[in-house]
Length: 357
Ligand SMILES: *Cc1c(COP(=O)(O)O)cnc(C)c1O
Image 1 (cartoon, protein in one colour):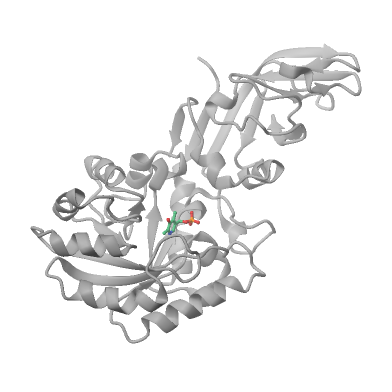
Image 2 (cartoon, helix red, strand yellow; image 1 turned 90 degrees about the vertical axis):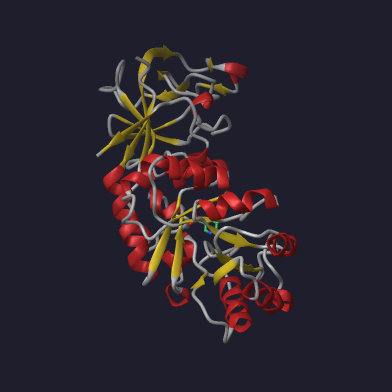
């Protein structure tokens, strides 16, 4: 059997969720959109306890129905709400919570009778400028929703654009805009994503929304005390299936873009970009081989990649290679690519997931 696989550490997932809930000071939605950032939404939701988690959040109805099919009875929030009014009866029937982020959604709700009223999370655009009602429109939107028999209760929410930048003033500005806009409105509040929960303790309120941190990756570029308590959930790993001894001056792989600058022992790993490892990871990206630090060399192929064994004489055929996980933080790999841990984790493909209790 091909040795490429993604181990998913379920106790680590539960540990991270408990940390998120503790940091939230209230309750925390476990964000399992995009197939739980590549970790498998149904298995992860089940591992967090079909009823134990305060609730889950996904991007859309399709993702929520997959969780309901998997036996998840806890609340589920649709982070983008609905895309057309025809989804509303299903949303009500499956007892899903629904973000409303645009005027057209309020219009559609007004026109659509429902078998039971919805819990609506009304989103404020406090500065991200992607979706959400503007501060000037927010209270009028709230009043329209409160008046509808289709609406059972309202939660006020907003989303931070730069909470991962611990020295940026932007997050406090967004929080101030939120507080000023929702002042006096009854109901619960939700502002914090993972960097908000980890890095901005004064901004916590009723509901945290924890995504990346559940999977044990830090959203920050620097060491941060709370983030240091996270445990990586995914370990992407494979084995060395071939070893080459090359003289200095020899090209490796497609394009010959990497040329050895010393006599080099090259290990070929059975894992490539078709497994979700980034095709444009540069030479020097960290890997761990039998627990020892080494580096990627040469261009990543579809099914294989090459690593430097020159300084690891004990490593060879059959050695275990970790591409990211406990020894190589995924955020560290992302840094080498100018990418993000989010996109690396979501990009997992082909390599089968193996769940570890
Ligand atoms: C994806 C998402 C989150 C989770 O963000 P993380 O940074 O992964 O914690 C929270 N809130 C909203 C609205 C989202 O879309």
